[in-house]
Image (cartoon, rainbow, N blue to C red; front, top):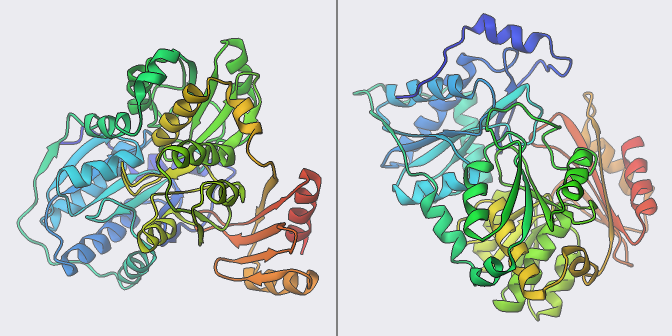
Length: 468
């Protein structure tokens, strides 16, 4: 059973009500559910959402237990208790894994032939948020079609018939299979001989649970920051340059060869070089591809918000690079359709089907360290060998603005660009420059991402977009 600390709704409300970021409505989309604890996140909401999930599992005649886990955020145990009570009420057996990285959840689903999984996480959202990610029996996040159907069940308040209560079993060995898959990706002896000194910043999320054993198995001398998975973030959750300024200093102070920075549920990874420079998430994905394509050439998939570095690397290896809508489920759908051997998103989420069909920061660790060991060069030198572009990302509150009206104005504002509305609006210029503007699926914001040869030009494009 879950050893949860049960809190009353009043105590949860007290936690949320003093927070200046509090929102009035939960964010519910095909990507899952996120809400502010004590404000828009309530037991009633969790039960309704999980009831819809149980209904969908029954509709699909999905057999097997449901894996349940969390990313370490405060009140995660309580939310797990609510999820567990709802699933067992409808006859579903639950395998409780406690704190687990999101990519490991997918591995556990396949290992236990589960019907699906629920991960209690708000990913990179601020600490006052929590939420849910849902998986299918195929070990991946629900895709757009399944996610849309779930939303329909949720809004219709569909619930399955109650039956004999399901059982609850605590999983103990939750990381060994994932670890074995990661160690089989490449010749790890070369990494082990290099004896890299590595700073791992898990920022008090779930990443250290597997990150520390993995790096030690790779022969690394590890400096760990935020290894306690208690949700008490030492800096804002998203691993961006601004949020990691202090971590950059720590990489230099500890004389590390590289800094590896995860988001709270450990599906994303950002890099810091030995000089304390933020290489970031885009370069992480590109470096993974550089390592893989030279050893196992294959077609790759990125999303439409990812740097065109991947196109250059695939072309150099004589392979195709395909582009999907934003969202790991969309990337995976295209990977399967194109039979691609690797994929990912420029937010630092590599997807390697040799391990699983989920963004996986640990895949990034193995492939980047393997590249450093093979090239026998600092990571900053290797990164300089990849064609350089300047990508800039910005965001602004939607404040009730209709995103489609913004897209229409931008299309008129830039008549010399071709317009693609596969996901939001992507404007492409003949010289390779591009601008993507889209509403977030997980936050009440609009995002602008631009890539040109100049950081100032990219920044200017984003600012023009957000002022429209």
